[in-house]
Length: 116
Image (cartoon, rainbow, N blue to C red):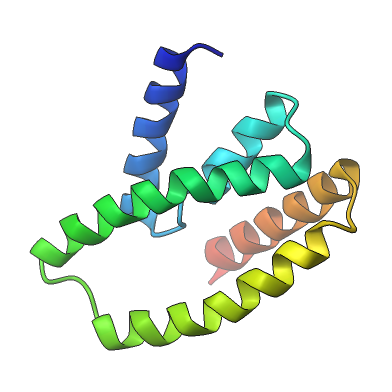
């Protein structure tokens, strides 16, 4: 993929992440897996992109007064711990296993949201 395609994919991810609140990893990780990244590199690279996208989305939603900062900070502090554990766990999962786990998580979330 060339740089222009990646920028366009990033713009689409930014729109999707800011609109849905999914964080963008649901869009970026599958894209990187399609580009033959291994699971660990796809997840790590996704977080780099999401850091930038999330900061921009936070700014946009903050301007619209759509942010509960206290709740966000508390979730973020918990997320710091979870992120460290998750990164260590991912080191013990093959890319093939990761694809299956990731697919099940997406499918489960989709079913939950669809039927709720």
